[in-house]
Length: 363
Image 1 (cartoon, rainbow, N blue to C red):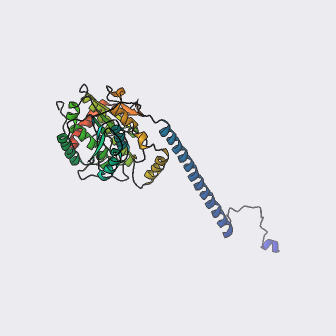
Image 2: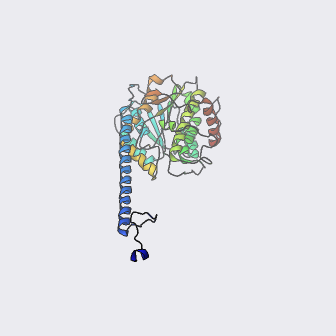
Image 3: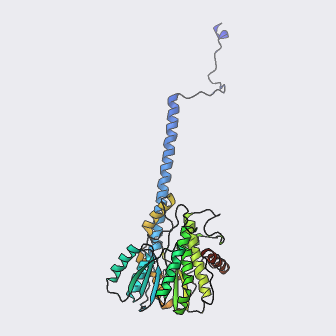
């Protein structure tokens, strides 16, 4: 009777009703998944750190083991050499070496007090030459014009022009008071205007030379728009800005070599390698900080970085060799972008418009 009123339920039958876990079991499941996720994150971070460290060591080997030294014993007694540079860096090291060889070196830089202090310490040593310091911020076209005008008034000749001032691309786009993007203004536009203003003196001083810092960072750029060199419509990036400025420098050097062919003025470009105080990018962003870690591990000394500058300024090996790109005192191939003569001409014409200078062949 009881069995009919209350039938026994078969415990093996699945009625499709899920049974919720006890609160303790649910907490254990969540904790297990949390622990697993934490371990995955830790593993990923460690893997990335090991990979980055290994890559930094590779960069150190590649950057330090391939250093080429200028073996030329040539002297440059009585020659005037103009170098745009920071107060410290490869420009100063090149000035030090060239002064030892007897040159009258004019170091043009923005940090004039620091540069004067460094020059005084070098001049106090027994050298056949001398280093003079003049103020020049290549980011300012107005300052470049004033500097060139004064140079042409006070100097009688210019045997070597070394364009080595550079600024890494910033985290955020910075514009000058003349409406130019700061990286391009410092690295390219100022140098473009300066070399054009001094072409006449370079010709009259021939045989003479122009050495342009172009950096292998130019290879990071596969294309750019000559009509927009200051990132008005194109998205800005610090590394992109630096790479573009270096590609523009190389194209400028190539076109200048073409324009001055047969004039006795030799024009070449170069890369110094990774140098701590001449970074590709600057700022406090994550990319800049990671790059700085690489740079601290892989960096060359400024003396090592200056060797190719010195080689191109004095070596007889390049006395008649123009329009080439050098790394570690050896000629290296350029990217297809920078070998493009048509692009070099378009860039040159666009830069003439930007800086307000029209090049004349009869200068």
